[in-house]
Image 1 (cartoon, rainbow, N blue to C red):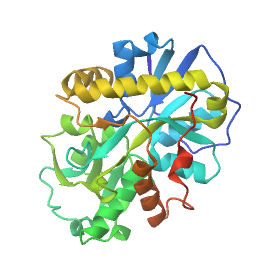
Image 2 (cartoon, rainbow, N blue to C red; image 1 turned 60 degrees about the horizontal axis):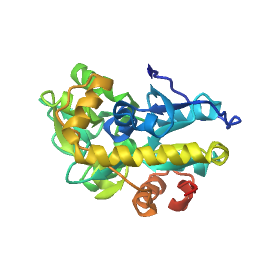
Image 3 (cartoon, rainbow, N blue to C red; image 1 turned 120 degrees about the vertical axis):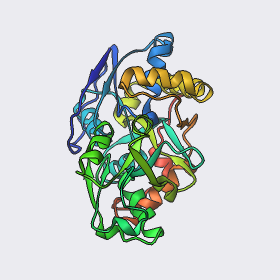
Image 4 (cartoon, one colour; image 1 turned 135 degrees about the horizontal axis):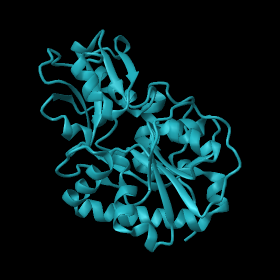
Length: 302
């Protein structure tokens, strides 16, 4: 069963975790957090003894708020959003990896309209750029890419727009550029032009997103957390080996046409793939303080 939501909002203080025979899970609906779609379609959740309802929500902040409120148990979010939440005292931890950035096959790139006069980072001065979340990894990586390529990130305005709406915003001229993720990038390929691989400014390989829950829920539901993590690994292995079949499933859930997925999904949570995200978060003052990458990883029972 698929529910669609575009709720937004900041994090509140955690409510008491709820145990339910149905595991309520939220995703942003992008390629980087699409493993739940593959798992649902292929019957992996059912085989693991999990009954899962999936909700599509606007971004990781909205998903975190729903987990805090107790209406969700597990959700996807960017690594930087969860690092920021934990740095501010919210007890969130990753239980499984999502998409992992690979500079050779990027699944999120900085784009402009195909006929835009913008040709360089310097040309973005005074322009407006759409990102998934303000003060998230899309913004931080774009800022670093601009600064490293002759531009001035302080001269750029960022606005928060959901990925499905970004191509239309570019066409209308509401924004001048966008950090556009798959599958919406492929769907808009005839209308946009890549300006740069801004995610590559973080590192050549790093953890884009992961599946997280509150530490209280993980402690009280270790078996469910472990089963969910196992299904995500199974789903990642299948999708990595079947990019065309995975694209067909993703298109069904998102209604975005795509021939193949470009994301590589992580199999295990590794502090080394989280560290570059912490570094850029501190550099661009998104994180109030540095935190240990390993602290973002839940300790699940074996």
